[in-house]
Length: 231
Image 1 (tube, one colour):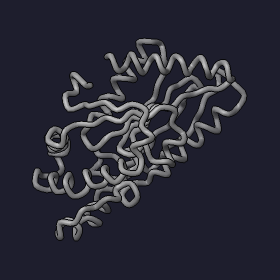
Image 2 (cartoon, helix red, strand yellow; image 1 turned 90 degrees about the vertical axis):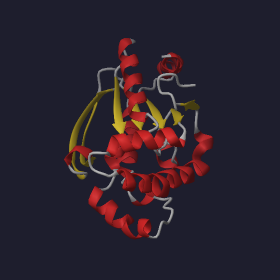
Image 3 (cartoon, one colour; image 1 turned 90 degrees about the horizontal axis):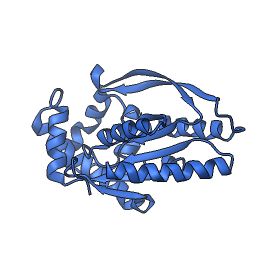
Image 4 (cartoon, helix red, strand yellow; image 1 turned 120 degrees about the horizontal axis):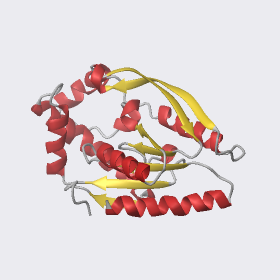
């Protein structure tokens, strides 16, 4: 809750600046490695903002994943040879879906300030973990000009996303805790052995590669090994 209070205070200050500068809309990023608690944190922040009478909406970067069959075929030989794969963002995701969405939001928010205006769009061919990992999900989006966008996922610090984000939060956890959460989360469609391969050969190398290039863009780092008592 303490982190939510701090972030809310930042939101309040930026809202005052936006009003003074005749601007609208805010975008918050929640980044971190696999199973670091990004979705849980973003939802908690959304709930806290709601209590404070702020509307918010969550964009999940996992929606931009390529379909599961494609990714598993791509990785078959890599995993067979136990090679490290550092380019999940570039090869396994369609992050232009997210950057194009944020660009449209930015263009909408540059229009003459109008608290009654709405941003409308349709997001197509999104990854759906509940539909065998197909890119079949469709979301109709309708957001007021005052809605705070919370975009959560591994790679919000990348320049093509960060340039649209006002404040980027990075969640970190111990590898042991991350792996335990990952095994529990994907157990319905991936066995433990394969999950460990994904974790050590793809998840961790890709995120380390990402951090080495983008860590300096972080506005706030939270150690989230104990998600009940983050520090």
